[in-house]
Image (tube, rainbow, N blue to C red; front, side):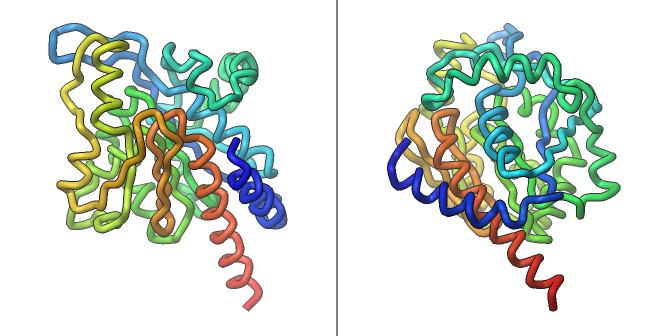
Length: 270
């Protein structure tokens, strides 16, 4: 890990741990297991990208945050098999077995909340994280509860973290009510999409070129180098590019959580 990232993370940990006790962060996950391709084939090993979920989950949980998991239908997520490759774990591949045990045995992962349940009491959460993986392009992309949660969390200034493919969810919010129009945003790049299609999925999905779509929608799309460690923060929104971006993502996300907690602590004291 870069020395500056280590220093920044330590400083954030010192600040945020003061506010984390009894606070919650919500993880929203896809449950899709298959992705139809334009060549008539089906990519049947899709789902949530495990490294994008578990590294963020572990880092946020280690700060003392309670974490809830929610899916569209309240059933456990499928894990993309490609995400078990050690190269996607940013030097933390020693956690792969731990992560596999987590998704196999953890009660919150096995029996997540349904998204409707989240909307009953959204104020209990300080932020939301949506990990990437092709699965979300199948279900979360078309789920109105996801759009309502994103809009509500944005309105209240809660930390919103969208990883890799997850920034595509912004595209499904009608432009006239989309709170992120004009924001700087990042996502998986066109070149990275091409690599996945060519060498992993062996075909193209219908919905692709996320970055181009975000730019056309009125967001300020920015990107790093392919397979680089790159993320962007604009106000409450933190977006990151790929599984290699976990370090950049967590620094920005923890900063947003820290600011939200501080703001609400000061507001409570007034």
